[in-house]
Image 1 (cartoon, one colour):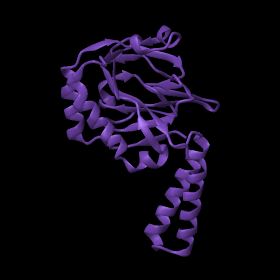
Image 2: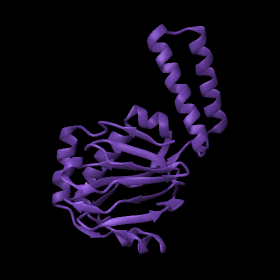
Image 3: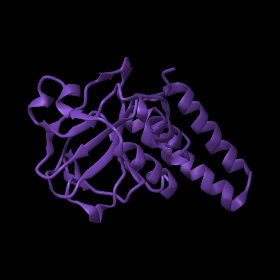
Image 4: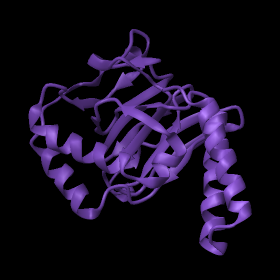
Length: 220
């Protein structure tokens, strides 16, 4: 399941992260790419050992994990360290699939959190490649897109301006994407039912089924 979540970061959060990135040390993004991906990767990334960004990384991770929609859709057990990427004019990232293991975690869900206004740069869409065609995503600052890490995807060339994003990967309690989607839909339905009618026999039955499916499918 691919999902877009708005307002993960507040305007103050975006300003805080932006100020930190202005002072950050950026390196060639190919340093963190696999042997095949580095052939098509052309961007800059904040150095992993740049500890001036520790507070910004923690802020972004806290906001993501604290977002209720993200928790329901992804069922995160853990996140990899947040990575800040920058694309300048002419840069892009060709078609690739993310590594299955990163920082000792299985990658189930990939996410990109946009840090700049889409009007400030041309191009730079995240394009998730599906059997139904390409799905290009370019979001407002503070918004996030999450999608299965099994997907082929690419970042279109930036033609003007600078594209700044935070990217990362989640290990989910539920490995299977279709199962995560079913749980998300059930949980959404039961919450809407509760908001409309309060606690009822139907709410309890849906809650029981949701909990038992999660118990059946979870990998803790």
